[in-house]
Image 1 (cartoon, rainbow, N blue to C red):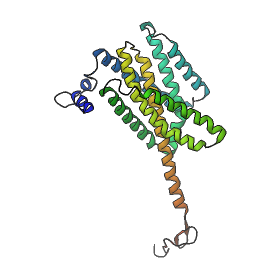
Image 2 (spheres, rainbow, N blue to C red):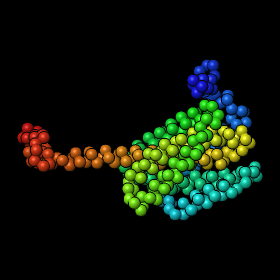
Image 3 (cartoon, rainbow, N blue to C red):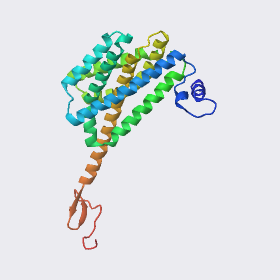
Image 4 (cartoon, helix red, strand yellow):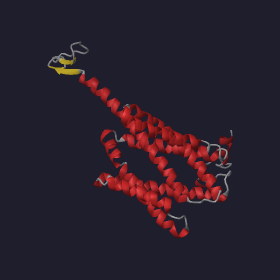
Length: 274
């Protein structure tokens, strides 16, 4: 009831959603609300730059070791750069560089999706947006600090998946570990959206108004969720195509019509009747 009342209250008495009502969270201080608006605006621009990175790879094939090193360098630079107003545009540039390189890094996956099932890209993007919006609203509109306890569990889950991956190289079972990382990682990073959002709010109350770093945290969560959703959709599409291929391969065309491969007659059509 607390979530529903806060959600309905944020739309005002008329019940009509406006940009002002959507971004007005009555349970948050004005300073925190402005910080969240700057964070999500920065995140939106970062997503656009990431899309440019994907396009650059599709057009020129720039993904590779260099983009991975550049992405890591931008990430380190953001972590080491001081959060001062004089350094703000430099940090914007580092975030844009990280977003562009990350887009180039997932470019090969997007390229494969275009070859296998282009509709999976749109579906994955819509699913990621839905997950992000739902978990963000749940984090903001519920009681403060109610999900911060998830931090320890999520960190432990990431460590366990990493150790399982290392163990699969020595003891086998890579496919099982991959599927566990795929579906388990989707749950973990979806929960990270919930955790990171509440953590951002609490840091803002504590005076840490670093919207660039906070946008980076949410960007990493979004990329992790999108990649996993897209891989799941592509796997399902591949399985569906394999079933259709096996089904079509079980029939052979003869001068007398369509017969099943293997001897049993399923459908017989005389060529003279057609």
